[in-house]
Length: 511
Image 1 (tube, rainbow, N blue to C red):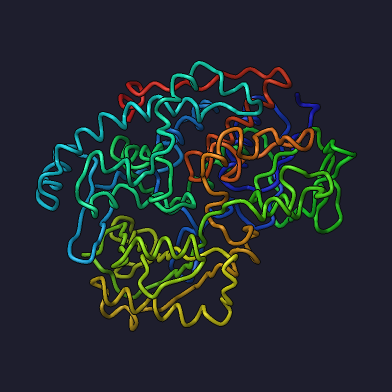
Image 2: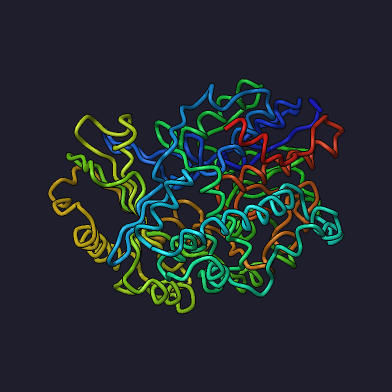
């Protein structure tokens, strides 16, 4: 395998995962990254003395990350420091606050206090959704290159738990009678590109995973995961080329034979792995004349996730009473979500998320100061919103909402460093197709076999990893996409590997 060249486009979470696994198995692997450091949207942002994560801030299903390091004979805890969060986050509704916890008894008592009469529903939720989770997870660890994958025993066993025809919000009605409590278990669907009133019920497992396996922070920010993966990759002999933007993949007919960089250099390869945003790759890096199923015209008809409006704020004050993670719901959440997804418009009544990690992690800001991250879900760029014009106005609206709905009443006078990222920047500077930050939506007709395949179906010797391929968006599933593609390449070249197995008892024992 050492005489076979594997080239990876992008040093994001998926590219780093597949890179370190294949390098450990003996492959000759090189990564080409347009930025000057690893991580992609999982890299760090530094503003003077303040440090932020660019994108992901929640680490859930930590065991998946640990498995990726185990694939290289290592322990993740030797490379990073993990902090379990309890409560997970603050969920703020117009008239109440809710603090979910991974402690089951504590959680039931809290539900009893805030949403009396619903605590028994939580017990049913954990039991029923646990069975769904345990049956579905093995299905997400395999590839779906062929339709016959649906005939595999693990899929046939899981199929009855797909709850086809039932929505996420409707499914929560089996457990809770409070609309606000249902929202507490459904808000994650927004990041799959769907309203909870449209999202398939199978995604109820998202909130189950949080309660079963907890939510973690990594000291230094989640960007430290990418730095740790890069270190492992280099330890295994892999090479990373930074400031090396890829212009296109080189092909001979349907066969991919390497990559061409923006500076004109050409790099031959036996296998190419794309870790770039899928929509961007399909419209910019791949030979579009060879694409039919995923042509630019057909991409335009696909369902994509929302975008995000970001504020990274360095403050000369620390807000001790604001939780590490905070989700503030719009007064009319359903109207806000459905207007955003169905009409591609914003409402003045919007939800937003605040990360205040300095209450947990002293490494992100000087003593007495804080690095605050604000995310507002907004329409992707199909909206036609002129963010060059609307961005500054919307920034003021966001600050006003923070003042109105949180303890940060004097935040304006304490901002000493700031960066704003609008959907326009996500598309232009980060190469995110139509600024759909969470990639292709996760409708049933855009999942598994119907999502872009890990071994890309329209070109030879081309593989995908990242949120745009199977199993989907979110760090744990992106890591899984890297392992799936690594295993496909390993199988092709006879490299030794073990198929992943899911053992919930073993996971909890090692937690």
